Image (cartoon, rainbow, N blue to C red; front, top):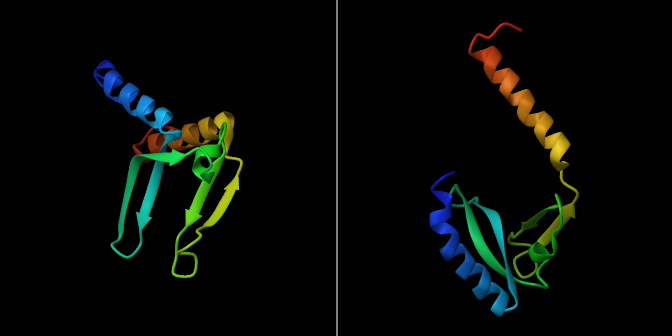
Length: 104
């Protein structure tokens, strides 16, 4: 965490460049089924793109397939939110502790 400030200038420039172009930055996960590869990337999107219009804990996914190549199928809705996410993480920690031999 102490090293993160080294990236402030770089990310500030990326954000300013995006804003000057009428765009926003979004972290997105990309799954390439054909090549069996997945990555998470920081990408720029025009403000009218569906990915740019998310707020709060909303989730969105775009399916680009042979059928939906020219216009991807977009599914958007509310995400779990902070409380449900924290509960899930806590559950995972308890399961891991049990797996490692902690008394239940």
